[in-house]
Length: 357
Image (cartoon, rainbow, N blue to C red; front, side, top):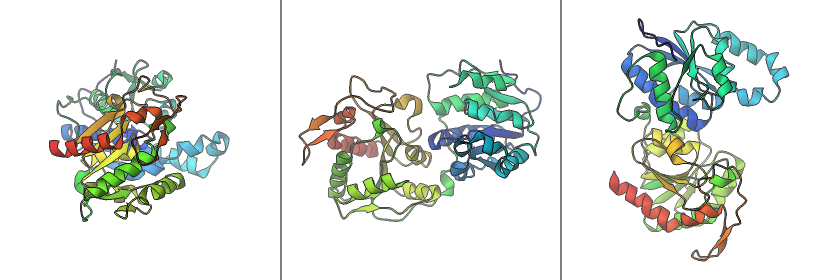
């Protein structure tokens, strides 16, 4: 059981939530809850360097402490002797905290918590994704697993810090800092993701561009690496009204999404960024479950593929591709489960979402 701080609410809290992009964004509503409950509370946030920009957006965050665990764990021996690691340890030990909250629930984050000064809070062995992580916490908190990640983190914070959990939906608390781009009506396609089973077929993206541009919309395509750049370049060729955007910072992407008519996304971190700035978003799901980690917030709609094995929660797929004869040129559709989410159906659901708002 957690030992809640009864007499004096924490005013200075260290948050450990290092990655990934979606997980970091999912943490923001809990910060808003805490700030609304305790006006002068301040958080220092340990987060992956590549996502430190997002952590700095929330007004409850006093200091961002970047880490590079993904880089460091490739060579632990070299890391422990590096100046970079020494600087990180020095910074995390420089303050005393009223509470240290590991909101990740993984060994990689739990191992960082004893480096800081203060009582440690985290999920118990029945609640954490990696049960061994609970061994590092002095205060272990039970949070039911079968619910959305945003709600789990909100519950963790309310129990660790000691305030009543709001009954309203979570508020990311960052939208007001962004300035929408001014342009003719446009939609943003968020096609980049990691697992092969999450990728909406390229030929379907191309058909969606034809549909969107024929209805008077510009389409803007984002990318984060060269593979995504090449795919976006191929897709954008189908219409002069589609635009391959330059490499953009997360803040620039947030501004772009704020001004959009809406976005269509796969299960990807940028889909969660879209949700965090209240951009109406239709998210397409195949192998994963939107009930646990889908885009959360106002104007969010999930479209789940209808297939016997979906959602399978697998990174790779052994199901044979299927042939789709209803598009201009017949193609094999992979992953096969996305054959149930044809472009016409996707666009209809996207336009229905607009009517709901």
